Image (cartoon, rainbow, N blue to C red; front, side, top):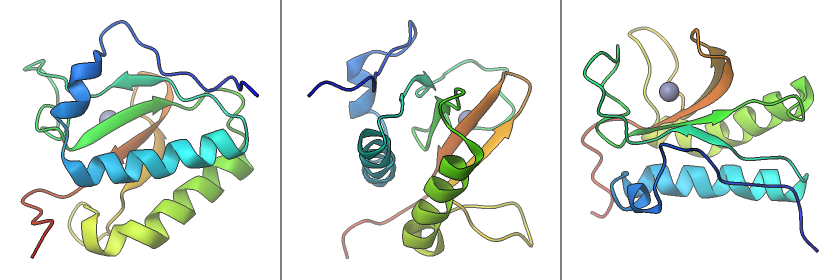
Length: 128
Ligand SMILES: [Zn+2]
């Protein structure tokens, strides 16, 4: 069975997957697992972004992925996937502004359209 889950964006190359932090990859695979289960599209809009004018460094450091929250992502799916991933990974791998709870995924519109922003904290030591 084929589903409509896709990975597509002009600026993303497959080699970018080698530049992201491994733990971000784990969070991303879990996101994809949810999407495949419910037949939802996965369209990456930003991964490794070296544009110097970005507000945050998470993208050029390979610590963040943006995924379009297209109309198929209903409020219910959006809340469920965010809760699930944050429950599993946020405490150990998440990041947050001061005084806020760490997160590995948020859904927001920062001016470029509603999207999921997957992120992990800096200086993660994976194996110890
Ligand atoms: Zn982002």
